[in-house]
Image (cartoon, rainbow, N blue to C red):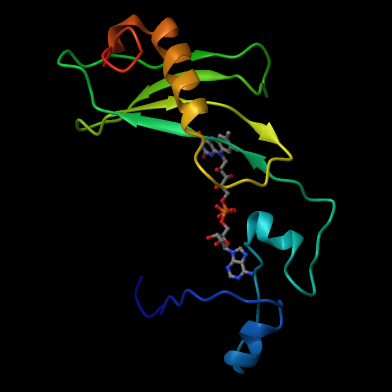
Amino acid sequence: MQGIKLIRRPYAHINGAPKDFPSTTAIFNCTGPGSYHLGGVEDHKLYPSSGQVVLVAEPKIPIPRMYIRSRKRVDPNTTYVFPRPLGGGIILDGCQQDGNWDGEVDLEFAEDIKKRCCALCSEIGRGGSSGY
Ligand SMILES: Cc1cc2nc3c(=O)[nH]c(=O)nc-3n(C[C@H](O)[C@H](O)[C@H](O)COP(=O)(O)OP(=O)(O)OC[C@H]3O[C@@H](n4cnc5c(N)ncnc54)[C@H](O)[C@@H]3O)c2cc1C
């Protein structure tokens, strides 16, 4: 981006950036769930919607399409298999857990994702530790 300097910095308050950069004329708040705690914003109507994906290597014969199974538009157990282009592996998902603030990876849940994705798309294997 020509002429634009990107700076990554945590702020406790929305007024922190203009204090650091007095020539600031506009602020766009794009902090996502961070707006819950960001001073001067503290949007407590906001809640997180947590997701987790697993990236696996592509099988020898690439998968030609994507698969998705969802009982409704927003489903905590939505399952999908998305092949990435240029041999970039396959994304397995997933979940959508409203209200979950925990940013840690849940390895047990990752196994559940793999099991569901294998049931949906047999081309990726049978699941389990030796099934990929
Ligand atoms: C289960 C699930 C599946 C999804 N699937 C898709 C999909 O397939 N395709 C799609 O397009 N979207 C998808 N989304 C939505 C997508 O993930 C979000 O819309 C997107 O990440 C929002 O981007 P953002 O930049 O607005 O916010 P975020 O990605 O939340 O970025 C906010 C940034 O602000 C920073 N920040 C927060 N607080 C502060 C602070 N006080 N000071 C400084 N920095 C701060 C954070 O560090 C972070 O870098 C999915 C979401 C879920 C939950």
